[in-house]
Length: 87
Image (cartoon, rainbow, N blue to C red; front, side, top):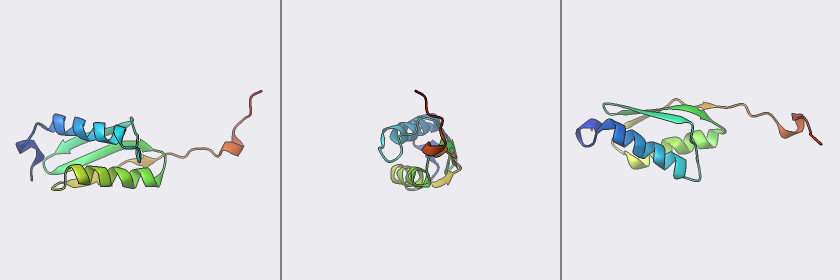
């Protein structure tokens, strides 16, 4: 299915971004979504591998007839014990 035939791609992309922001498994504000034909590309940084998997699941749930290309990167978050303590 070519997503652009049913709804303008920018509207579909915004719907996906909104779902990623609102879903408690993800809650990501810093992801970009681009629609090209029957593919949805998601880019940006996420904190965990679980969030990256959830992004794919959410997009597939919203748009079951498209290929999801999840190109997000998992950020390296420093361990809390390595952080400097401020008094």
